[in-house]
Picture (cartoon, rainbow, N blue to C red):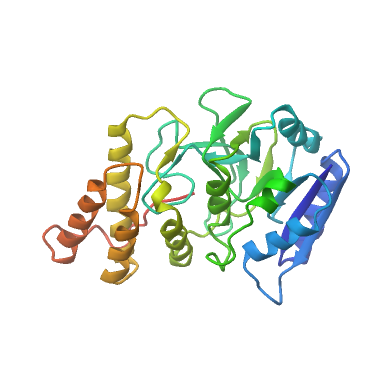
Length: 309
């Protein structure tokens, strides 16, 4: 039995996904669709309301522009939780490495196996691209342990959602809620990606300056605990990943005309890490100074930084 929480702004999409859920879920369920067209509350506030209203032990938080292809997915999801009480979150896409450098759930430019695990049919609204089947299961597992999940669809236990509420005080918009919730749960429960549930997601997300603003708030809160990984990585691997990620982030923040103070604040908060030597942050600061004073050429201003997915 599953309670499904949806933050809705498009009635047509909500109607389609409601009908889709009824056809495919295969277990008793309720849909808690919260109309957010007028108030435009942040998704954290909406999801917390949905968790409070839920009557079943498993809650699924999902976008409304989704079409689930797998029949009986409700039983698949609930069985995962029933099989192992240590499981706290189940998603269909997630990252096995969460960087100290402000980012999404994985770094697109680093395609090593610990970065992403997913099984999603990805559609595109913002770009003229054909739908792709984003399937990455490098160890051929039924479940892969990850650090964080993508917010398009994930399930958790109701008691966990109430114990670790979405941080509506820090995150006021529609970004970063999935990462924040995952980072709250990760020290206490396993977070996993399942490959047995397939769905189509109609939109790819918009990773713009507004998105990065929220990610910076998130990292101010969590930098002390980062980086985190569920994969075997050497200290050198982690250091080099962070070094490259910080350099790209500094370049992107300069291209998006963040102030020098904002960039330095990001680095200051990152230096609070308890997980690795802070010299990687100092290296990023030196890179910023070299760009600022034209000691090295700045990358093409039109180039976008693939810091998240």
